Length: 258
Length: 326
Image (tube, rainbow over all chains, first blue to last red; front, side):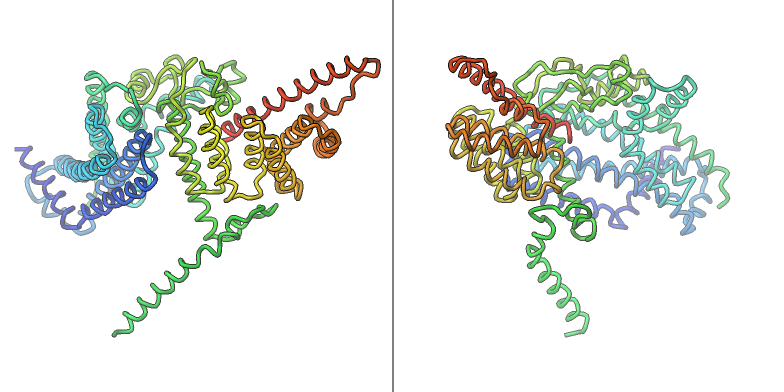
């Protein structure tokens, strides 16, 4: 029963995204990838396999994060603003179901966009005669898991602040959390025990999206694919963090006056 | 035709005309001698934006070359706190890259297990990232990064380290072809930066050490001396070091060419600018008066050999310093 509800809600998000021509933006971004790769081809890419793959991974990370944040941040605020939330909640679905359905829809839109970009990037890489390796498939899978976490984070933030503020903060966390955590680790040794405890808490609370990025291993030569247990751990981390985000957003959304 | 059509056409035409004449701004955006104090990009927003983009892109590519040499493993310099706490850099097992790399004061950006409080999450990051124990590591072939040097100097022709370090990497090929390629690359850099002391010095250095063509080397070194001496106020610390090297190489070249007077004049002029320079001081030392003629010749030969070694060592150190600087 619930699955049907989630499916309907997610389908609505995808259709809305298509109607708003969001995926056109993705197509334009992909077109930019092809143009940029054409410009790179002008210099010749002999000996630049690592650079080309690295660039592709960086561009994919950037564009997919933009799509994830922009899609997730506006879902609930727009429903409230346009008053389309009332007919939805008049149906026999709870607010938690609505949140989960919307999150699934955001994840679906992001995955579709990411896979479209992957396909266009693969075309660009093929023209450079780049060899495809199993680690690249793992990169795609891990990245998709990371995008789930980012969608959940953005959706949660949008329940507490305006869509613009949520998008900005999500972007900061998407691209800055790794740097912040590394800074905390560096400063840990020279800090007092009380501060160390705070550092540990912040590091645990921040979304460590860097762990889902296998781009470095895929781009550079001679790195073996990660083991199945590592992928399982990534899945567990994704599930735990997403659950926490849904719980936090629900605690706000269920009491929110609409 | 509507007014909107003509307005659109006119504004597009204006934009194209402006773009057509953009090269006229070249000398203002990239003046041959940067003005001391406020620079053009600090007072003109458009130049600042263009310059920032080019500098950022070339700097990003520069960092990428370091990453590829370490096969994707990101390294960072030790902080002052870490150095004070006695932490050591990972170090390198190779010494032939010493001219372009210095790994004795760097550690991996992703912390090692013993320095990471994150436990399971830290292990997960090390498993999914390009992390490995880098103690006494080796490097990838730097020639792999050559296209990046080409790309970064195309984007920002005023990025001097792109030209000089790129040429050093090309010149690792010790054949005549390697020399010719490195020289061609440096000459391209010289065409974009005709008054640059570093590039002129590097060309002179290559002619002196690789081709043993001292006359040609002297030609470039004299140009470097002239460029550096015109107005020393715009020289950075690195360029001042380069200029000191120019004086050393010039003195040594004149000595080997048997032009003693020019050698003495160069040493005197060099000491006026760099009074503490150990090599120039060494070269200016007269032999002890009690020595016989044979003894003097022996003493001078030993002194000159030492000066030569120290100058060559300083040239290599300068490249290492460029790497650290970035």
